[in-house]
Image (cartoon, rainbow, N blue to C red; front, side, top):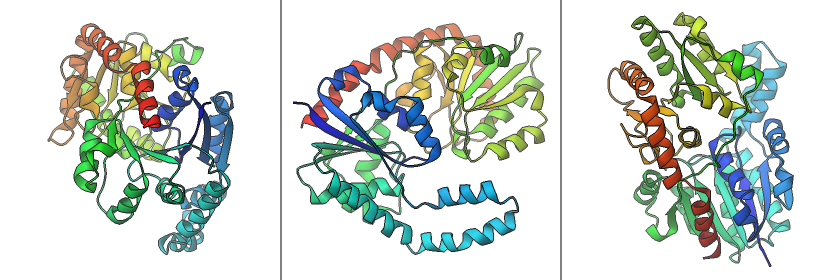
Length: 402
C-alpha cells in the first residue's frame, strides 16, 4: 500500500520553489510509491496556476485554505481605489492588526483545524518558499507536533536569517528532516540555528528535460540582427533587473552590434522597472513581456541568459533549464548558484558585492556571447551529470521512508 503524502505550500506567486514541488508530484518513480495530496493557501493567481498545470491529474486530493494576509487585502484595495492617500488610510487598521499578531492567531486556528481533520497522512512535506518564507509554513510545522506519527519534512529554499531564532527553535523540534537545495543553504541552517547535521539533507534541484515549440509571440519578440539577452525571473529588487538594464546600456554604447533585452516575469517591481527603463532611455531595446507559459521557447532562442541576482537566491531552476538547453548563462556568485555553474566553464559568474557591478556584468555578457557554443555544451553536460530527475526521486524516497 502506498504511503500518503500531503504537501503544503504558501506562496503569493508561482516561482521556482513551486516548480520543485510540481516536479515531485508528477515524477513517475515517486508516484509508484506514494499517493500525493496538495494543500495551498488560496489566492486567485495561485489557484489559476494549479488548474492550468492540472494538479488534480497528479494528486488524490487538492485542498486550499483561506488565510488572512495584508498582501491579499492590499491587492484588493489597490484594485478598487486609485487614490494612494485614501488607500493608505484604509489600509492602516489592517496594518495594525498584523503588527499586534491578530492574523497569526487566526491563521494558527485555521491551520490547526485543517490538521485535525486531515491527520491520517504518513508524511507532510512543507514547502517553505524562502526562509523564513511564509509564516503559515512555520505554523503548519508547529501544528504537527501533536501528531508524532506523521513524518514532517520542511523544504527550505533560501538562507536562514536573523530575527527568527525563537520560533525557529520550536519549528526545528517539530520537523524530522529539513531539505535544502544547496550546500550554502545547509551551512546557514547549521550555523545560525545549530540544527544537528543529520537533520539537514541537501538535494540539488532538478528540471525535466525540456521540449520546445516556437509560438508566434516568441518569433515576433526576438529581433533578427541583434544579440538577445533574456532574463526569466520575478520582477523584484533581489533579481537585479536594474543592473542588467545598466549593463545593456553600457553594451550598446560601446558596440557596433546592438543588444536587445527581454524580461519575462511579473512582480511587485513591475512599474518601478518600467520607469527605470524610461529613465535610462532604453525603451527601444528592452521589452517587458510579463509572465509567459512559453518562456522556455524564449530561453532556447536567446543568445545569452542572464540572472544577475544580488541577494536571497538559492538554486534557481531557470539556470538548470537553461543548462538543459545548452545556453550560455551569466549569473552571480551568491547562494547556491556556484553549485550549478562552474565559473568560466559552464557559465560566467560575477560578484554583485564589488564596485562596478554593471560594467563587469556587461563584460561577462559580451564574453558569454562570444563563447556561447562551448559554454552551452559544457552547461548541457553538467546538467546531465548532476541534475537528473531519477537521482532526485531516489533521494526523496529515502527521506520519506526513514
